[in-house]
Structure formats: structure tokens, C-alpha cells
Amino acid sequence: MTSSETVGLTVKRLRKEEGLTQEQLADRVRKGGRGKCSHVTISEIERGKANPSIEMICSLAEALGVDLIELFGIKPTGEGRGWTPSSNLSGTRNKHVDQDVVTQIRDILQSAGFPHQAVAHILDTVELWQKVENMGQ
Image (tube, rainbow, N blue to C red; front, side):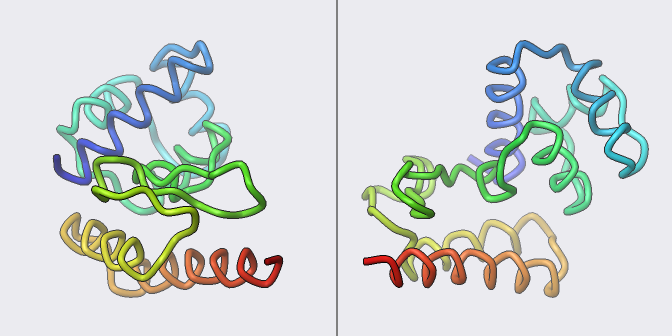
């Protein structure tokens, strides 16, 4: 599964969980002030036919009320700020994000064509979450 497909399936699942139509989600993205978005754009993203920009992914995460990293299949554990990789990113399920998951996230973002600075920022954020979680143990 490509990163675009992962993001698309996650957006679709979260949109449906919120009880939103594609048009309603597009409205939320537009109201967030981050540019143009239509139900056609949402449809293409959900079907994995679009390669959304980092700005669009941030807008979608905000509109859906989730952390950016969740759109890539990384789910909160519910225990502090720990994270668990979904099955499509790792064959094993870890309590907290570890270096293997960070490497997988980097590879996904780079293969999707994200700029180096965006990848570095996202990975710094993931590693910071891990450090904060480890401080509480």
C-alpha cells in the first residue's frame, strides 16, 4: 500500500466516523484557511489518486481533529502520548514509537515526495513525543 493510499483510507475512515460528507470535509478544510479544497479533491485523496501536499495533509488532520501523524497510520495508544504503528506500517505492535517506526515514517514521507525540511520537522515531532512519553516512565 502506498502512502497516498494509506492517507486516503485513513481520511475516508475518519470522515465517516465524524458523519461527514466529502463536501462537508472540504468545507472544514476551506474554513481552516488553508486554500482550495472541493469534494472532488477529497474523493481523489480518499481513493489514493491524489498525492496531497504537506499543507493539505495538515489541513485534513486539523479538519478531522486528529494529529497529523494519525493520517499515516500511526495511532495514539491512549496511554499518555505514546503511539502504536498500525499493521500496514509494521509487523509488530510497539507500546511507543521507536527508531524503526521513525525510519518507516521517514521512508513513507520521502517516497511520497515530501520536501526534506517537512520530513525533518515531522520526524523531530515524533521523536519529541517519544522523549516526552519516556520522561513519564
